[in-house]
Length: 518
Image (cartoon, rainbow, N blue to C red; front, side):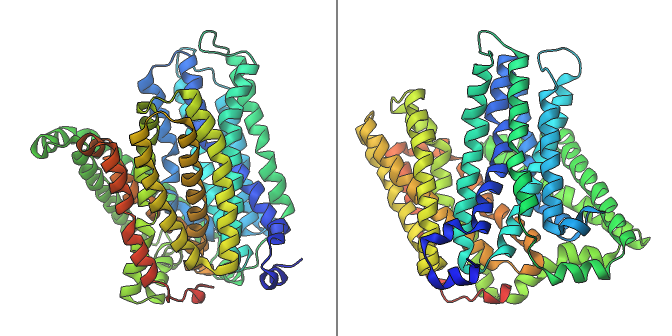
């Protein structure tokens, strides 16, 4: 059955269309790497006797996911020698990133962190490689998803991708811990061989994504073909070299400015009597300094013609300019407000949720059973429901329903705060919350996809997806302070109230036509 025929039938049979199923398997491939950097790796390092400070340092390897918009234009426009000719732009970058993921996981598995010497540095390099290659895979999958089906089907594709992503996280989270225990490693008896075999198994599981990449068809794009014909191989090479130098300069400037001006941060924290806010403000200044250094570097490269100015503009300037050209100033403000605020309610609440469950007297086993296992099932159901509703009634209505459901389900946590340890109520609240979260997530990803111009899929979606969590995560950093100030019940009421403006914004954007993005 073709996608065009499915558009007419609008039936649940669309879930079994090959390209829709492909997004599920690509989602599994995308979901596997993250926890191999976070929770699974943290437990491995702790069993190996590494101190907590060093363990948490490794989570920095996942920063690539927050800055993927920086190299998304490279992935979107630059062909890979030989591979792109035979596989196409999207499939070639998918295959390259998946091979890099496998090699990075194997590299981590090949290092025993309990040994002396520079072994931790080697593992850190492999972990950074995993974060970078996994974030690159995310960029390509997002572009592939948007280009492979009509806008009406983006919610459906999103729900399948999110479902696969959750399954991938289950494999690399609970699955990795189960394998490590099965192979003989525990907190009382550390076994490097057990963790090595576990990570080898995780590397092998990425084959799911590789096989899918080889079986799927490349989305058609005359735009990319025209770009490749316009720019020479030498232009692409110079562009790539500029990107590498610019990335190195950005990281160096950001780190050095933080080290040399650390005392200034302490002074600012004493002045405003708020260390987290001071660190946030200074991180913003570091970012501005680093971006300024990159701008100066670009001017130097441009002055001596070391980089093709038109290629840089096509990669970085054109995607942003296109967005502002397609919408009026008022529409741009409303759209950016929606992107920045849509997930604010659930992210602000989610950061403090595990602490809340413990404070209510729930054990780790209870939390794992209800939130991680049962909650995962409800999130998947919510995602499928969101995709089906959006397919039938449209994305805007689904957006509104998802936002309203999020606000209402957050209020249920007030009831938990009053009842305390009540397992039945715990199951009920998690059911409602995760259903709403899965529903809203599928609808929102579909809306972001509808905003993207097919000429700039990789760049524009990477920018939108980074923006959607920026402000919520900043505010979420103060969740603990807010709970201390107002208590759990009032905090949950606050978390619901801050989600109400989103409903107004959705109403105001209901008539904005995104069809011109195709």
